[in-house]
Length: 184
Image (cartoon, rainbow, N blue to C red):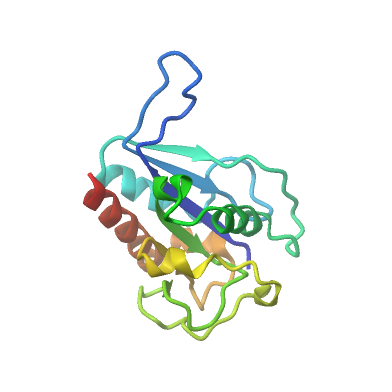
């Protein structure tokens, strides 16, 4: 399973060093999955489109990091989980993070809060990730705040196909839209 991650930041500025930089009310940080080219993760393209259609002044920034097509190296999951383990929601950096949306997380643990199946229910609650024993799961505190979910599709093991699953798109975009509108 190749994971992708999406983090939404509130009141973030892209390129603030550059004169005339755009300041957004919400900034989506899109971290592509293993083997994906730099830019939008195909797993998130439709989700981002729905969010941008529903919420004004949303920007998108792509995480830039080296990756490989080796599916044993889940770079996107590792990059995102390490950042989230470094910053608790109560810290300065953590408070800037509005929402954490994970799809196809290889580090997921069974029976954790925030897990959603392809129907946005709990059909994947018992599922474990391929690398769950490594202990790199996103900290429980992100789920406990209600600001984090992990959406999985039992019928499509490759996250790249999630972007073509209407129920996954709707579940994911609704989660982000609700949190963004609440904070406006």
